[in-house]
Image (tube, rainbow, N blue to C red; front, side, top):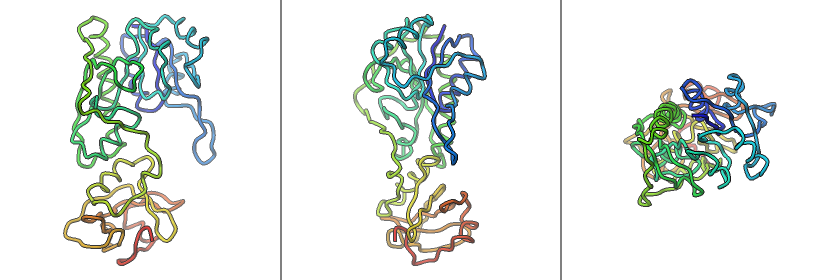
Length: 309
């Protein structure tokens, strides 16, 4: 097939690389405009743009797809389908109807569970035992289109958003390349989603990552994993933000919510609404992520002190 590819972050770049190395031809890449990033706030191209440029593929970076001239340009490349992965722009009907095989989305969940922008983080927050990739025919509704194929992956007890992202990105790349063969031949037919069990994974905001120590420890341990690497779980200690990158459950300890009950090289044990959480990798303002033993040398904490004090 001749393909237009629309995507922005690393998740999408993995799929773009797989499609570039396949028998299909990428004739156009759409990605988000360059954004300021880092301490110097220099303009940085998306992972998808960087990869496309390295392969000599034409790149366009519109701020909207609701522009007649842009739609005509996309139509002019004479593609058979558009592959979409974590693009970030809404596709209007005019674009959805441009292609013989339509617009096909690589979505990182087992639809209809976790429709929306942040399915990986929400699967971890909810304590799901598995997730996966859905290859979906796009329509105007948000992730409501019929599904060609789903592939499942187990969520390990220590998975965070970064490790699960990498598993799903690799699986998505494999699944889309094989699915396109079936779609083109007609062997794969999209099946309507069930409305039962549909959930919505809204975009994660920084304030959601603030730890509420009154919640059960099991939920907070999931939150630390879900918000690693973004936006990072955090709490306040004497007015300073402390970020938590790794944590584990602790049994047999009793302390008030937010109270430090024990401190050792193994970690900092903190009481929760039910149970306790051991913080094993932390970060102070302006510092690096450090194992608990190293963190404590520069930021001493003691039993009886409190987070969010």
